Structure formats: structure tokens, C-alpha cells
Length: 121
Image 1: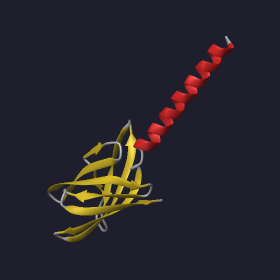
Image 2: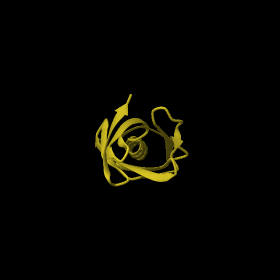
Image 3: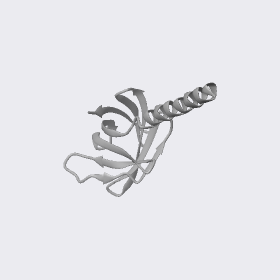
């Protein structure tokens, strides 16, 4: 009986550790990111991307200097990447970011303009 209890406890512990590890991994982009997209038609574009997980999905806002926050309309996420969709004036825009290291990401704005992101603590 002790072996059964020990095996059961070990199994539950293993499952809980796996779930915690997955949550940390999928929440890499949760928080605020200072992002710069280089070479856009209007010059280098500086954004703050703020993401939070709500009901299991990422959502958030884009903050540009001197403007009201813009709601992110859609978020696509994979293991080490995120793609956010939002409006800039009348244009639908997307920003892709890929994990570089624990506090940095790289990607592109509209698949054309290189972007770099730094986590804001």
C-alpha cells in the first residue's frame, strides 16, 4: 500500500511541475515590451506592447508616445513567438516577435521592417 501511495504522490508532483513549466513558457510575452521597428515610412517606430493573459488568451494594448493606447485586436502565439494585430490610423498592422533570450525579442512590423523588443521590468 505504501508503494501505491508513493507512486501516486510522485505522479501528482510530476504533473504539477509540468503544468507550472508550461505556464511559464507560454507566458514569456506577458508584460510590457519596449519595441522599435526600424525604417518605416514615418521613420523608426517606437511602441510599448503591453500583454496580459485573460481567460487563457493573450490580449493587450499598443502604446505610442503622445497617443491614446490602441487595443490589440488579435494575438497569435506559438511556443516562442507572438504576432499581434492592431490598427494604426486606418491601417491594420501586425507585429511579430520571436524570443531571443529571457529579456529580448526580435521580429518585424508588417513582415517588412525589422523590430527589436526589450522587456520592461
